[in-house]
Length: 258
Length: 258
Image (cartoon, rainbow over all chains, first blue to last red; front, side, top):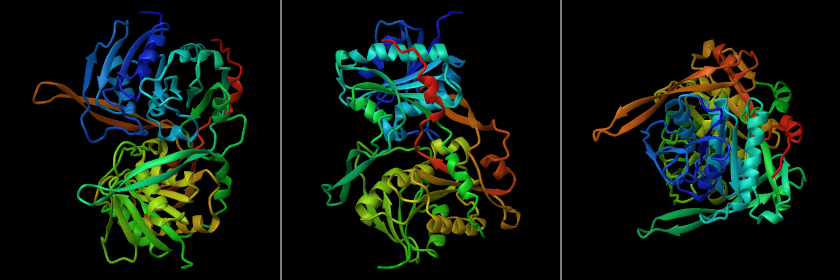
């Protein structure tokens, strides 16, 4: 048995995306890497799982690195389940997801396939991190992210994470010299103000395209949005016990009659 | 202007499912109802949104009730966005999602399309409730759920909900005489132990079906699982600020070097 940690690498942009190729390159310097990633982009899939359909898995070789790789027809959450139960045969020491092409800060965590893979790993008891770069382009420049990705992964391997907690890491789209460091943050309160672009198809039927703009409603200087706007890498500890414990006492005063 | 509340009804099993028909029937006794629901089942979609595809919306009439109904080609979260921004033109006073055919208790909240609609409404600032019955069958008997659905919805209309909080309501699959009442709970710690059923397709290629069993890891008597097993309707307040605030202090002691 190797003493190097076993690291599972996942993403939601698809196994050939430059972001996951960068993540594989960095993880190869830390441990033994197995990639199980979707065969096509899955962005905006949220925490979808494939219940009523079949899953295909294919061993693939995409470059000359030492990692072992599998391409999967499912969602990011499916990839975690398949990797742990079918491919690895044991829990990896770390699961890293990404590097996503585009932000998963603030409320975007809710819609994120990248974070759904990390959360799925967390549910399985695996220390897990989702990484995202604030650049939606396929040809985004991931070079400045590497030292930050490496030190955060090494810290998680060394320190572990509490049960029920995974990390949501977002990296500003800046050259290395302009990144000021790493900040531990809370999720900013924000939403998307959607607009729907209404059009007619060639048969004259109305249809809609979803468009919208991100609105940060949170002026706090301890948020991920503040950190990213000010040149820092943001690290938010994320939990999947969604209970709003502070409301339970008040709800118990309600008058439920049937 | 009517003084009756404007109630948006959504689900993830599709607009013709018996669960949403029951919910519409109950809401018609409380307010003015607009239904915007998927034209086909969306279960297991998590918090997916339709980014790279078109959305179609069709006004439909499914029964003799006074409600106005629209069938939509998107996910439950898409339905909320379309309803608020395109169809209603204003925020409804209440958004109810369901009644789902099958449990969304405990960790299932993470995978739930029913709850993603409620959470999306919560993000938009609308008081919102997701309802689920612990019976996966299409022909499940929803009659015992009606008084509980009604009293919980009326309480939310009267009392409101704190910012950033929606309700996850699960109903036991029992006749009315055996339901003991309503309990406000926390989300039980649980997971799914997956197994993958490996098969070969007619071309000889391996594929997998996801199967698995739900495992409750939580012995607490204040959880939704305990309430449901003991004949109560469970009400869990759910938040979408996922920050694990209790971890921030510890993470700030880590040694990040780049």
